[in-house]
Length: 429
Image (cartoon, rainbow, N blue to C red; front, side):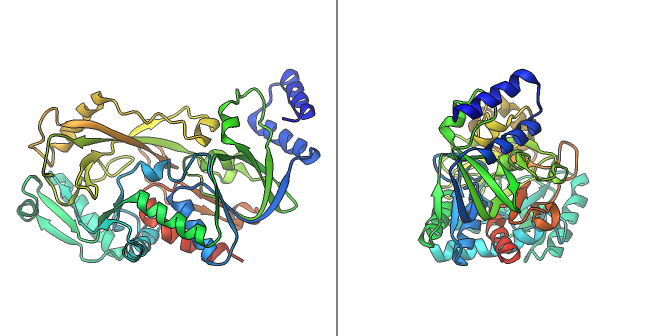
């Protein structure tokens, strides 16, 4: 850190208790005066999750020079690697919403891409089940919504029909979605990274974007090495080691996208939605040679998620989850470095057994083993209706060349290539 800047920041700390926003503003002013290395670029994508990678690939395929920045040591270490790996049909989302449109389009693109590039996937189908008479009306609503969204071949089944397909299942009725499936998300991301790199994209890992400022109608991004952020004690604003000035910035930082946007000095914080985090745990089924189910099994959706459901991976391993646990108290640095608590307590299984036995009554005590957990980047909180994906361009926030992606939770994996397609067609000039 430059001595003069450090001295200035320590002086600010002594003389006043300043807000984070004021500290960022002061830092922006100092950076303009300091000799920080500055580079002009074409396109920067912040975040190497599946959505960011898909966007980089799409931009590079259009002939753009792309740099992808991620704080981790490799791609896909956050939400992209901690989910159900399900290819969703597009049933759950309000008609004409971005989630509905991108899920349906993204599913088509994703299956096609997997088949053409040898990415492991399987169209195993899904049963959404009503386990009690009061849930049947909700099942009918889901079928109507899926039909409006353009999901093909949906079929309502009587309980006995569904249980004939899946003998271990118990339900009153079920909605069959034949086009739902599963995908090896790591293989998908690896393939997308390879294509992006073949088209000239550069991936810079261990590189954290900690903020920026607007100057001359261009967003200046502040970059530090992640190891320096790890060692930071928070006593003063971090000094960037590099400033990048791209023509196009895509904030696809997932869990940290909101925190990062609030650190862009000159961007109106009023357009940034509130953020919420929902942790979900998965448990695997032990001591079974043959999985009890061949299809995805989903209950009626619950507050904050789609319910504790049955998923299979491509090796036949069955898992249950995720549940919903709302968490808070996440500071910006922890968010930037993905320092979340991903531990799964074995005692949490006690909450899973009664939920799973509603549709799988033969689940044996002690058969659930802790698997893994993930965190959903939400923009609606507990007991609130889900909110659509938010994709903000200059028409919303007034900053040329900046695209913010907020609340890209499920069905983000399925929708990733459609989001990339949309962004390229809308924001490339």
